Amino acid sequence: MEQILTEYMPALLAGAWITIQVTVVSIPLALALGFGSAVIRMSDWRTIRALATIYVEIFRGTSELVQLFWLFYVLPYFGIRLEPFTVGVLTLGLNLGAYGSEVVRGAILAVPKGQYEATVAINMPKWRAMRRIILPQAIPLSIPPWGNLLIQLLKSTSLLSLITIHELTFEANQLNNDTFETTTIFSLALLLYLIMALVLTFCIRLVEWRFGSNMIQGGA
Amino acid sequence: MDMWDWEYVWDILPTLVLALGITIEVTILAFIIALILGLLFALMRRSKSLWLSLPTAGFVEAVRSTPELIQIYFLYFALPQYGIMMSAIMTGVLGLGVHYACYCSEVYRAGLDGVPRGQLEAAASLNLSTYRMYRDVIIPQAIPPMVPALGNYLIVLFKITPILAAIAVVEVMRQALNIGSHHFRYIEPITLVGIFFLILSLISAAGIRYVEGWLHHKFLE
Image (tube, rainbow over all chains, first blue to last red; front, side, top):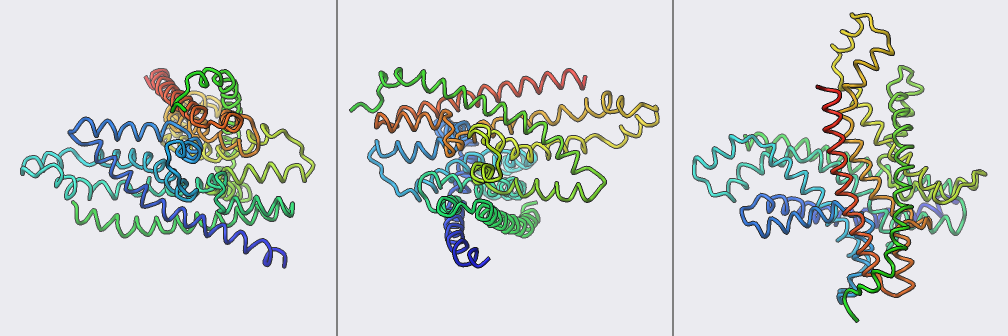
């Protein structure tokens, strides 16, 4: 018991702190890429629409770990040298942004057609219609699926242990190699992941509750 | 040095394609475990006994919200300590199978719950046996809505198999890294692996859409 408190917990908590940092930094990137590419895919300009579609298909169609290794091992060939932390955040953000793009697109398409027709009828410019009428109704619809994606993001951070980032999985593995107290160490690590997932779920519920209902009142 | 060396590509392609076979094998085996174990979890969770349904619900939720990679490390290091010897590849198949069984169990649950109550009452009023009720009424209505979700998890599972590289299973990602470190050139092997995944994901997505249409036609019309 004492060993758990003095030896294992500090290392695991240090790892969990890195996991939290990676997750928190990746979320805004994923949200920006998801909303950005979804709106771009609705645009009339064919070239950028195609570029956004290619981005989404490539990042959804290939494995996240392949993307991680590609950015980690191949970018240096192009003279781009990034810190492992940056590579990790970039991969998680780009990957989740592609999945988020589909979520946002689905939500935009779920806004009733009459709303689009009304903006056309009052001659509202397309971009303003998107910003003032469509997105405020699409965002509340997209919150629950975004919640699932963010849990997925938290789980994906464990992949970063494979590019030498000292997050929770890396620390657990390291401790296990030193002590072979496998069951204790990995149970503790899984428990920490579970707690982080519960906290994240709680935060998402909070956003759903506040943001979701307010926006619907304001939008409709 | 060229940016992209075709000669190198032709040189490593056969090795990579062979390793892709391992990836596909792992995917199929793990998915079979996920389908069978998932059904078991779903039935246990629907059980009237709280001693069965609550621990199952807790287990499913805990597995679903923690990373596959650390679960697989756990199995890989802990099983031998309890005297269970398994090859790395079988450990990986088991780990992924159990993880995705938890996802599949939710799909089964939603599918079974999705059959309207009136259908069961109608079957009861027609005095159908339980077996015939499941065969002719519940299953035909429960399966078609499950197929897209299960198919989706097959693709998710396929795309997560590269994490088995971490426990030294020589699937396609591990092989690409091995080749890369041997020749000091990563760009071609890793890009090829990406292309493999892209092609196979697109093909399986099309395949699932086809099965979906076929099932809809067969059961609901």
